[in-house]
Amino acid sequence: MEQGSAREGVRPAYAPGAFSRAPADGRTRECRVPEQARGERAGGERAGGERAGGRPADGEQARGEHTHSEPPAPRAVQRHSVRGQILDALRAALVDGELVPGQVYSAPALGARFGVSATPVREAMQRLAVEGAVEVVPNRGFRVSERGPRELAELAEVRALIEVPVMLGLARTVPAHRWCGLRPLAEATVTAAAVGDRAAYAESDRAFHRAVLTLSGNEQLVAVADELHRRSQWPLMSGPATRRADLLADASEHTALLDALVSQDLVVVQALVREHFAGADR
Image 1: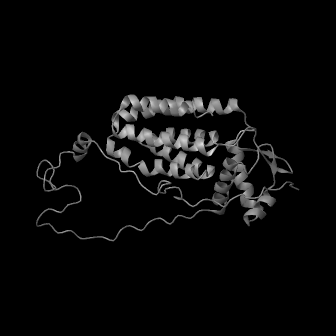
Image 2: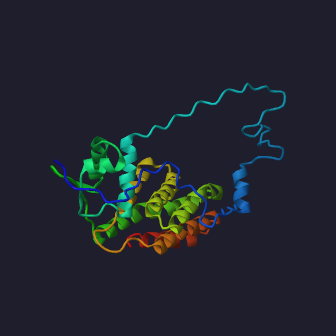
């Protein structure tokens, strides 16, 4: 029979999109695209909405033509399984330190905390075991893995080897207006950091990095980098919890990086990217 208990305060799963919020001061920053970039974005469009060659711009109807509107395709309904919600909640509890490294937790006890049976909790914990976040303890439950500074430093080094050259390459090829589209994600990290919500910050931080790397078009790279990023967010075996000031400093690097990318200042981009990953092992 499994033994152990969960600590108070393990939170429910987060709703998708819960971190796309306005900055802590309630204001959104305007993303100004340089004049040259705006000209490139126009892609040869002429006044009056026509493209070169006399064709109407995308989405416009030529004179004398009739179009038949069609009903929009139905959106796929997002159905989140109980196991998925429990998995999200457990990951948040890991980041928050509510699940303590070295402690053993039983599926029935955690299930009682969440108001569900032990089965979805056990399935979620088995997934975390595959990821290396917990270890299976036969007849008892799951022990939260204990990590030291060396493992965190190694993860930061591998992440830098993957992400730094990709980001520098994207800085040279991605137009400014594409970077502007990532502004809400960067500001979401600032919002989470401002209130000291480590779990919310972890999610928004990974969302920002995923969005940047997605511009590379390499899905395998995005998946590998995201998994390394997730593992780097688990708490250390000992030491103080991440401070609010540390979260704010990290979040400010996201917004500064976007500013440099929009202005296409490659020197500043390179310095910020390397500095950002140099601090990832702290």
